[in-house]
Each structure stands twice: as structure tokens, then as C-alpha cells.
Length: 183
Image (cartoon, rainbow, N blue to C red):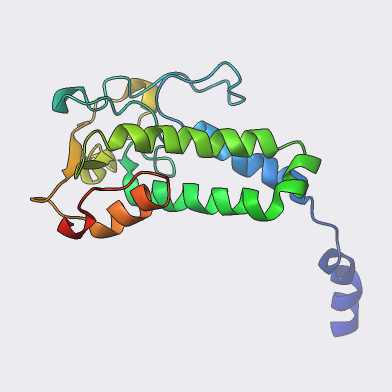
């Protein structure tokens, strides 16, 4: 029985993987997670503009960035880490990304995140690290275009520290806090 099993499934173990398709789909996933006014070259056409009032109640423009893995919350730390990893991927695999036709999309994905990070750091020693509430969001299943959940913006500052997020976000993405030690 074992030889028959191996004979039947042996070819599957060596089947070719379509890494180009996987790469395209992973970048499409990020396009589907975009928040804000979507660009004309948006390939995920079933998505539309969303989160257009983000930050308004706090007097800051936090439109843009990425939702967190199908949620309608924008969590700063996973977003910053993801953009860092995408940036390293572009540096390490630029030729392969270009050869697959995905370099421009990967660079657009990084820019989408870094443009948001610049907005989230509107003044020295202030960084907005979250928009929305993860607890209430997990009880409400709706597409971002129709959100009715709380869109409160959570702020890091000397009274509300968060050095891990501040370090990942600002130092790696070209912005620095003037007194990072306060966090």
C-alpha cells in the first residue's frame, strides 16, 4: 500500500509553484486593505474610498494607510512592520520584482504606507498609533466603505508613551521624534 501511496502522490511533491501569481496576489491583498481615497490605478476594483473622516475628531488628517488584515482598524505597529518588510523586499529582490512586473506595485504599496506615517506624525513628540477600536470592530462585520464603528484616533505623546511603535514607525521611515527618549 505504501508504494502505491508514494507513486500516486510523489509527482505532487515536486510540482512547480507559481511564485509570480503568489506575489501578485499578496500585493493585491494590500491594495484591498487600503484606507482613504483610492488611486486611479487601484486594481482591486470592488473597493472604494473609505475612512475619509479618520482623525477629523482629533483635528488631524489620518486618511490613508492600511486596515489590519480584513479589520476596519488601522493599527500602527503591524502597519509599520509590514511596510518595513516590504521595503526590505524591494531592496533585496528588486530585479525579481521588476521581472515579474510587480516592482511598481510594490513601491506604490510602500509609498501608500509611508505617506500615511507622515500624516500620523503631525508634530514633534506626537504620533497617532491607531485609528478605530479593535474590540468593537471585531463585533461588527461590514466593509470599510460602510463603517459605523468608532473611528477614534489614539495618540502617542509624552503622556501616552509607545516607544516600540515610535521606533518602528518614525525612525525606519524617515521621520524622527525630537525627543524619542520621552516614549
